[in-house]
Image (tube, rainbow, N blue to C red; front, side, top):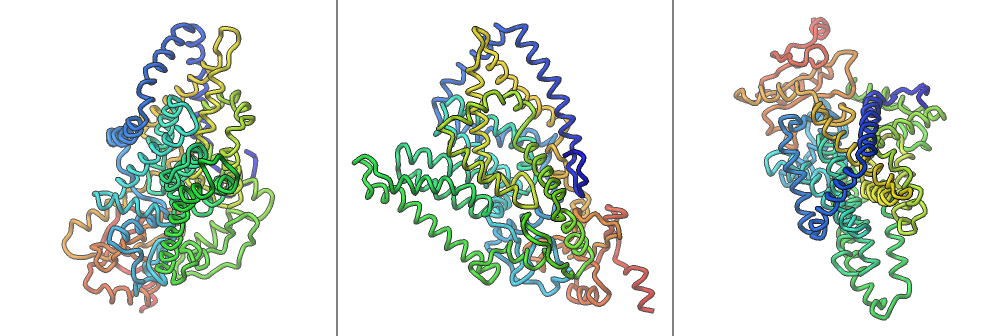
Length: 573
């Protein structure tokens, strides 16, 4: 796999460095526990017994986990400051959050949309993000509270609490609390899920509500858990609809089978349908109505999703491995042509080598987000989890979303976010089996389990010390140059128009042309240089604005009054 000729090979250096450090750390920790076996066992028993009283108070644990995520992340702001957006997706999500914060689902199309065209944003029939709305609502809440990132922080804390609540339905309280701590360490400190605006936590929360509710419904059905089951489905449908649909299919099948089978007289069919089916159906009908209205508002058709409209308008590359590549499209600017007709079409070439390349890239990205090298020590317990009848539903859900994510060409770990709860559950169940393994009086399984958890703690602490916002820094380290120029212009009187001039070797992933929901009322508007004719129309429309020029590729701090390119001057003569 490492020798594949891939157009976009994964950066293995961060993982290799982490592996070397984990190997050394594991050797030291295992040696210490072998030499000081009795002492390490006493410390472990003391900690395990100390958390027992707290673990028996699930409400307090849930609140503490929620507050812990917020408090620790805020305390780390000197080392990991509020993230600066840098990826196309982030700006699109931020537009959605800004739109919702203004009390609208979408915005009117702009007359100068050709000059203001931005990635992953629909210009017609409405000016809006192409992504599902759940992450936008989170960012809108944050914006109303002062910063969009506050919404990311709150959603991450909610994810941690929701997964802990889910684990309580499947595992003993102490193990559920340990699972909440693992989620905090893995996703809520040095992950791009909390250190950027891409999302991940919202869909993970939906998956946790779904899996936690189905376990409780099967054991003791009630309307509250039926409502949470439907709420989980609604969140998945509005955050990761494709992955969420396939992930939830086994749980929905189990629920339907339970509704139709014969049970005890106390759970007669009428009671089951009134207690469980009616709340689920009501919430899902309301969700479907909202989604149809949302689609109609953004695309003009109740069944046409904004994402589908954007794909139809801009994309010619395949979304799924089995799809053909469409003929190249024409665009109004060179940046879109380079991105869609160049990089995007080169990512997958329909060969077996291409399939292996995108599969290898997915695997590396998913491992970096959902696992740590210390999990290799837990592998002896995994065999027993594979044979565990209680884990059949989680395994089916994991298999469905694995197929879903590996069938698509594109990959980022938040695509598989609905399965976060399942992965954590399977890891904890493996740890439980491992913890019980021994040879005579030597509890070697407990030593491996402890070492694995300590390595996760060490990995997280090391990343904080290095100021690494994620294993792959490109996911969460935006260029602050655009933000600096924006703040400089916001401090000046009047309104401003910024013309962005790119070079021929422009980095297609570093685009500066993104605007707020209400463009004409914005103090600063960002636009592309298109052609002398189109630029003249733009200047005439924004005639009351001061026009500036920035050149991100040659000098990303350059800001000066606008002057047309030299070749345009010559052509005018």
